[in-house]
Length: 455
Ligand code: BES
Ligand code: ZN
Image (cartoon, rainbow, N blue to C red):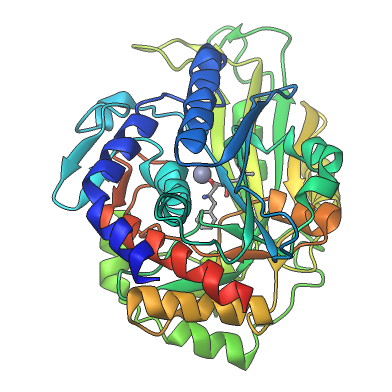
């Protein structure tokens, strides 16, 4: 094992340079103009996987290609098989003007690498590849067989991966999936995440007049769809911060004492948290702590709100339409379709006849929860403790990785979520960064993990 860990230690400088090469690709899956960059990034990954000794190939899909890479299999040896999942696509970098350095020109400041995708998910993902490289290049036998699946559509709902898993389900059958695409509370708190929130996305479109109207000539005699939208959305929450849609909380389980105890192991400072987020005051559903609110309670968020004129100066109109992009985050026992139905009923009931209402439902996924007491989870906790030299904590997280449900359904495999992102990594925000100490520790954790999981 020392040989592997020493190899990691001795090659950090090159690994960081390689991570810089990886984040230089503007692999923004949401924007069609980056189609070629997506393929180039995936091709670079395949080449990189081959260079470190993996058998790798580029798998075209209806969307962006998927990278599939395997450790060389030893004939006759029956090893446990694990799949490592990650994504090479990144969120759009906009607004550019808020970046202190350009998003796709990696910059190192102190122990941080700043670039879009550094933390979510290229840095976390590369850590696993570097751990495998260490085994292969030092000719140390890998204790497990590994298959890497690195997709390019995670940030847009993993549309092609389900069919890919179906098609390759024999090849991908495994004992568990390992994913580093979540967070840890601080460098002092390595963590195993045992729950993620689910999601249900939809869009509300209200239509009033069949074109924008002069607000002086006609305003007052027709309903303004932007005002109706504001009124409707204002009814969604009550004064306690609860979602007032009947049925929204149906089936939502209470936190157990065990879970509350786990949460309490991570120190929480309201002032520091408020500062981190740059808000004048915190807000959330009454009766729950901020950690409970953001990880174990369902929410209803407006992600985008558009109507009327947004350009320079003013334009006196009654807009023809108003739209809102919404996502609700879900917790165990909530089903996206049922939640959308409850929302639809609520909006239809409250929408006046002066406008027409359309609700377009989008992607959805149930929440994810696994036992932190399983044999695999215990192995992961041992690897975390050895790599970080600290007792790991158990986390519920608020974000979603919808595909982990498919790993369970299609491959019959649970997912071990071993995140390396810090709360101030600015995932999805300007000035995203990744901590280079965590990059190195993640590699060690990965190297140790395969030994623990093989036991
Ligand atoms: N890495 C995140 C998910 C995440 C982050 C989970 C932190 C837990 C803690 C992932 O890249 C992501 O952003 N997922 C999307 C999914 C959506 C597009 C369906 C999300 O959570 O918004
Ligand atoms: Zn993300």
